[in-house]
Each structure stands twice: as C-alpha cells, then as structure tokens.
Length: 144
Image (tube, rainbow, N blue to C red):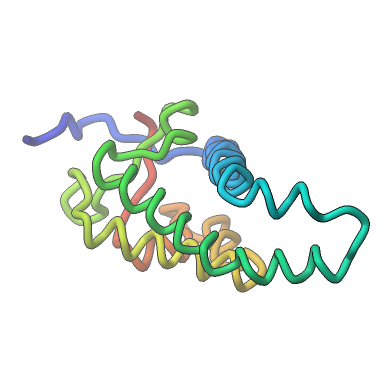
C-alpha cells in the first residue's frame, strides 16, 4: 500500500527529542515493573544498586530493541512518536520500513545510547536530520 508522499516534511529535532523521552519513560516503567521486587528490596545499599543496574543492563537493551523494532515496523512509529505525530519511513522509497530496517534502526539506537548519545547528535549536522540509527536503518523521520 503506497502512502501519500507528496507533502512529506522532516520531523523537527524537538519533536524527535520529545518522542525519545516518552519512549524512554515507557520502557523504564516496564523495566521497573519487571524488576519491582529487586528495586524495592534495595534500601541504602549502593553495592546492591550497582549490582541491580549491571543485572538489568542487557535485558534493558533487549527490551528497547524489541520495543522500537516492533512499533516502528508495525505502526511506523513508537508510542512516543505517535503522541508527537511523527513517523519513520524508508529513506529510499518513502514508504513503510521493513522489519529488518526497523531492527537495524533499533540496534543503532541502542548503540548510540551506549556511546554517550553521539549518534543522536549527528542528526543536528546533516540536511536530513538523520541520526546514527537512521543511517543504520536507512530511514527518515517525518511529520505524520
């Protein structure tokens, strides 16, 4: 199904940042529910807190990849992007992304987070406002 591509506009970095915050809050709340017993059991023990953070790092990255892969592939946008009315499209065909593109984009996003968000900053310095994960997934973020 071809979408109406005649009036595509790149999403602003502001709306992308707002969507990022919404999505990270959603994923954080999900992680808190999953690890609630462990979070509650930690009082003032900083060693236990560090241990918990080390324990949940890999599951957190996996959850982020699953969340972003599924929503971008199936809906064209994460919940945060839906709220701020932006969506992800294929940069070459200006159409829906494939599940593989969505997966590559999600992995690229996690990699950007691991390296101090440098991959996000890249979006401020190119005409397509493309972040590292947009380059890895060959995507664009546009207004919905």
